[in-house]
Amino acid sequence: MISLIVGKKGSGKTKKLIEMVNNAVVDAKGNIICIEKESKLTHDINYRARLIDTDRFSIFGYGEFFGFLCGICAGDYDITDIFVDATLRIGGRDYSELTEFMKKVDRLGQLTDTDFVFTVSASADELPPEIFEFCKEI
Image (cartoon, rainbow, N blue to C red; front, side, top):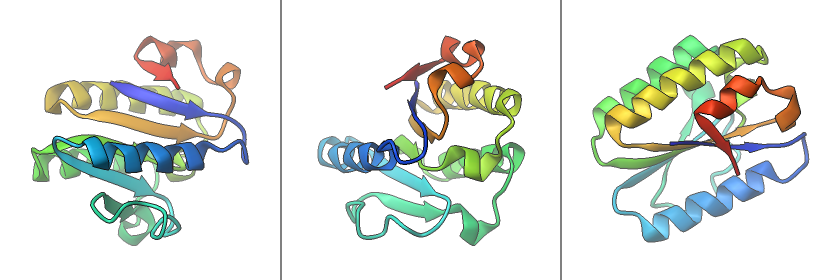
């Protein structure tokens, strides 16, 4: 399952994501991963969640990002949830590419039984309606 936290910059998306990560760690039946663009959440995320900075691995663009997510899932079969902050800053602002990326992530989530949550700095009406066929807004 893919969940999207959408809203303009400054609308509290990251704060909501942090709360979700920390709650997931408490209730976890597996490993929790939090991915961010820059190393900013170190002191906000519970130490039991694995925090990964995409800048450290030079990840940019949806192709690289999807390969990165596949590698994470392939390396640890116990992951139950992956949370991603700043999705558009990692992959880019092309909404059609975002939609194709989310289709692939949806298949990855089904294959690995992993739930994904992404923050997206855009309002829901800016995103292609097709994206909500396999992603839910929270």
